Image (cartoon, rainbow over all chains, first blue to last red; front, side):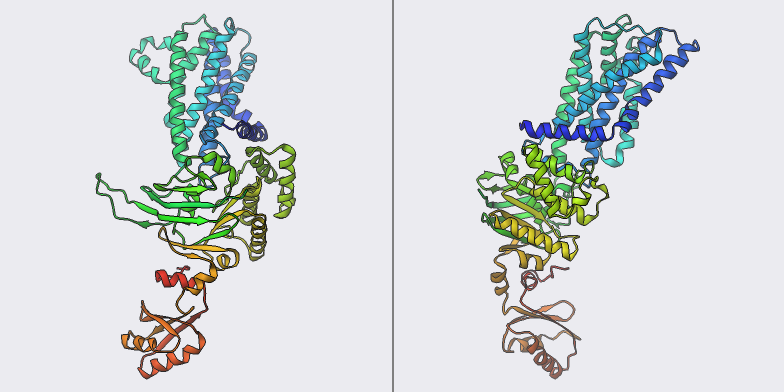
Length: 256
Length: 339
């Protein structure tokens, strides 16, 4: 690995992100915060949801923001840069193995997802308060879960971004991302699916379930949640899978 | 230390349309595979290319679109994996020592592949950073290259709005940014106005004078003739001729080419042309035509016209070419480079 080239590419991504910061902020936070406002504030305030729903919702929203941000931050530039204009070519010609170009994208996406996750907490807390009952009793476990979720989002973005053509971006969101969000236990805990046993089993193939449940387990442990061990094993497995698939697809796209 | 380029029997066969890294383009179709329900057509882009380009040389690959020029450059620059054969830049085998090779080369692709999220100056500076140049060094080099390529007034603008010619100039500046030992230019003057083309030629010559190797591809014979020390003519993935422009031009029988077209086909008449003084070779072509390779041009026309008149055959069209690489290509393939 060529440390200088790798860091220069990271600096390039930071420069581009900084240039688009306003659009990036809207893209990252507008939708989650609208969800927080409608579900956490309006629905709870009007009595359709119990007050405790506020605390239950927040970790799910955090998972949603992180996963959305990471996938978007890696997949969208990759889809564009591998198109006709081949913008990525200059980086593929940098003096290091091209796998590191893909890994740099994953690192950049992970950092963006972590930033999104950590920033959504205070925003949502401000929108929801009073009555949000977060407890950070196990900060290290929380940090590990957050990191695994961020890496998952970036690796997922790599696998998707290198497998989807520009003409299919809309399809990618309606066929992959939207079902993942709705069946991802973001607005409800996994235990709420007890009455839908078949669905409860099927959604376990959805990595977002482990992301939401893992954050729930470390931020609002008072609610029922999946065991942290299951969360770690699943997220670790998904990360390894998506990274492997992503790197393979990246090589296929990069070299003819 | 300058580095040369060597290839040994390079072959590249695509099972799908050539991806963008290879420059795309049309290729010859080989016979279909019989395996599977719907046999995929195999596209042979390179069919045994062996080259030995000396260090410090300006070498040109000349050929029509789809001849395999871009695929050759793709293989030599680590962007295309060859189906068979080897390639070396200096001492390094391209496919096995990619990072070492990438340090030695600068590449200008056929289409501008600039980073559209950055300004012109940033594109050069980040490119320098990928190659480990210090911040001071890359800023200085970027400024001087922007000046050299007449881009200073647009240096701090995002390149998305640049004209094709400006993008092309910036692509070339970027390839020179890390001062590579070997510079690849794939159709560098396509889309440039004549003035910029001359500037580019001058820059290439100057770069070469500092001992660097330059490999450029073109389908423009004047460019190959003016710029290259040696060249290879490529067609259907094969090298059909290799040498200095002078040598190659001299290898066409006679040098001059008279392309003729008659009202009707007459093998007898063509036989009689063969006997004219200075005519080296006569070939019948499509549509009652004939190509005369000879060591003189204009003075043959009246004799040809007289013979045709005597045989009562109308002479419809005459075209005289002086010794050129175009004639060489025609002689080898029966097709014009421009077709």
